[in-house]
Amino acid sequence: MIEIRPFAELAHRNHGWLDTRFHFSFADYHDPERMGWGRIRVWNDDLIAPKSGFPPHPHRDMEIITFVRNGAITHKDSMGNTGRTGAGDVQVMSAGTGVTHAEFNLEDEDTSLFQIWIMPDRAGEAPDWGQREFPRGDRAGRWEVLASGDPEGDGSLPIRSDAKILAATVPAGETVTYEASPWRHQYLVATGGQIRINGLEANPRDGIAITGEEAITVEAIEDVELVMVDAR
Image (cartoon, rainbow, N blue to C red; front, side, top):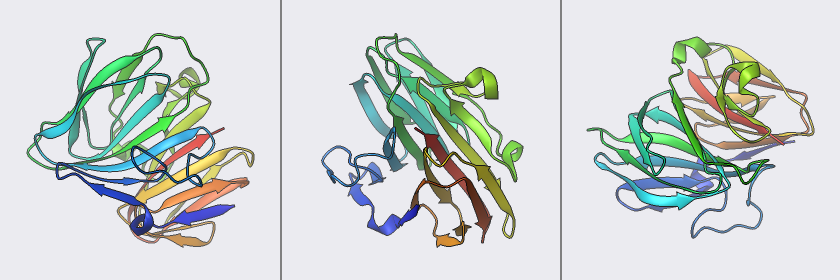
């Protein structure tokens, strides 16, 4: 089963400093048909204006992954961590028993990113945060695991959930295939160009909800960057 969720039909909020689309219910947007996809709870498509951002606020019991598409985001939290995550790179935060954090665009340009929340498999653990650079050239024409519940097995950033966050860059006319388990849930978003996924066409930043597939083949109609979560 593959369901295309057009970008233009996603819930939209524009707060001036933040222009965002919600793939699933979030904040004041509630849709009982879109409360999540498997263990995936949130996928927000955020555009953050220069010199602005999210002031300190708390979380607990959630795995929060930030994939920066353009610009950079600067993180600061109650654990004493600070860090800047640039385009193509990833930060992860396991909220655990509770953490307060702030995320600001300190750059002179807009920052665009995906904010992804995944429900954890384990509770009662101390919070944690990590960041890593992932050069886009290293995933040209192939899937690269950016974060997962098995970091030692794939060299990715650790999260506390049976899930993987992957990315690939694919030039126009080429394909990339992901061997999937049909009982799991995949959610895919393409940026930068149109794609064809198992024969179905999708536009940039459409949400693509997938389950029941043994193989996911993506053909790039235009140069494209793919971001996907594979979760229980």
